[in-house]
Amino acid sequence: MTAAAVEDDPRDPRGILLVTGGSRGIGAAVCRLAALEGYDLAVGYAGRREAAEAVAAAVRAAGRRAVTLPADVADPAAVAGLFDAAEAALGPLTALVNSAGITGLSRRFLESDPEEMRRVVEVNTTGTLYCCREAARRMARSRGGRGGTIVNLSSAAATLGSPGEFVWYAASKGGVDSLTIGLSKELGPEGIRVNAVSPGLIETEIHASAGDAGRLQRYAAQVPLGRSGTAEEVAEPIVWLLSDAASYVSGAILRVGGGR
Image (cartoon, rainbow, N blue to C red):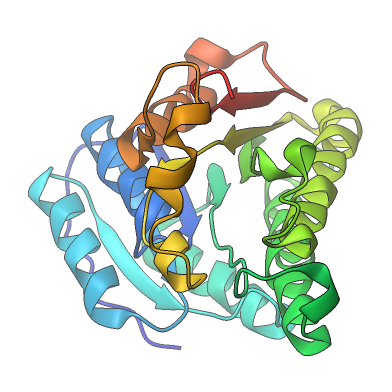
């Protein structure tokens, strides 16, 4: 595992934040906004190094430290290495955003691919489990940690079901919701707040990656606010949940979907 150079900054950060899936979409927007709020960033990514480096450059331009770290969140050994490298570069983590996620190709369930379904669950659900475990083991007061915050990326699909598109993705995000609720109760006494944000129809490349580039236009009319949202509009509540302003919020699953 390699890391980009970390620039020194004499100012104390608001926190040390690791964002998985930080090279694109909502994860990248979280990194950029969190840097403006004073966080130092570990930008986790799977295969898009140049995109991750561009996000890190934006973090440094905001006056904060940044490191880019590749890892497959579905691999528990890689996840442990990711957290070790982030702390070696930046110091003890105080916050985690689990943004890494995939949908697989959009198709009816009758034509679904078992291997693709397995991979979606491994990344979205199992990967979030692995990352939460590593974060909790480091943040837990009973293990000498100072507490912290975790925000998981769920999806409106967890309750809408995504019929005819990717119900396996919806199921994987339903697992994230259950994990968030359970961990918030178990880790609260350890000083760790756990919440989730559940985005709706958001303008990211995930739709094209699913083979359905026209999805945003097709569903926008179903949104009560009459439009799709932006990654930045999802990043705002995520960074708020990380902050002291949300100090009494734990176990929440916040829908950010324009009313849909």
